[in-house]
Length: 202
Image (cartoon, rainbow, N blue to C red; front, side):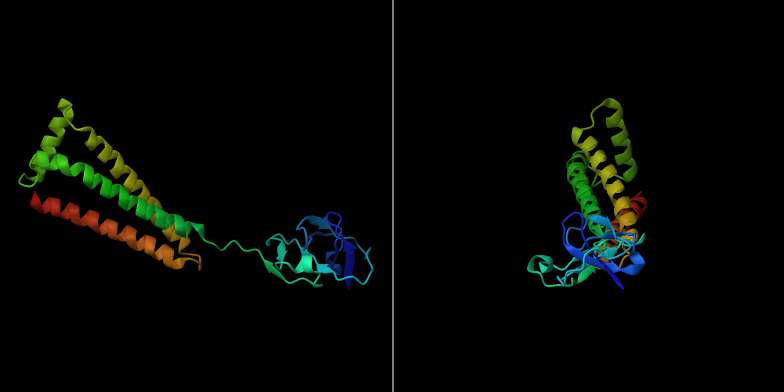
């Protein structure tokens, strides 16, 4: 048998199953947590909303839009679920940001490599020239900025993989998670290809 009472916060008539007597419940109108009485304290034949019990593993339900204001009687509720999967979005953003950092790195390093004739030099000669310029303080400021960009890009790349794997376990926005992982995997292949090309050239 249902227990009928007025919400002490918004004064709306509500009811709850008798098994929730003296238990905390959520008002369907104002969403405030109230304690249901042990017996009915409100008996008029006015339409009543049904309060949602506060279970330990569930959030309070929320009323259908506009139903309380229009006086449509018993309410229909949809449980509030946190299924937006924001980690998938952050994984994709991190992967794009990592790509942007590597592009900035290439743009900043390009002029310096051209100035030292890296196109015709061996990787060992380029490395020696780079070390020599660093020791003599002749390294352009752009190269330091490029170093920061590549370190930030690596950090974002690792972050995108971690977030993508975690977000992939949720059913929502799974395509976004897969896109982030594919983009991160493509970056890894590019890095590996560049490293193999450098070794082969050496």
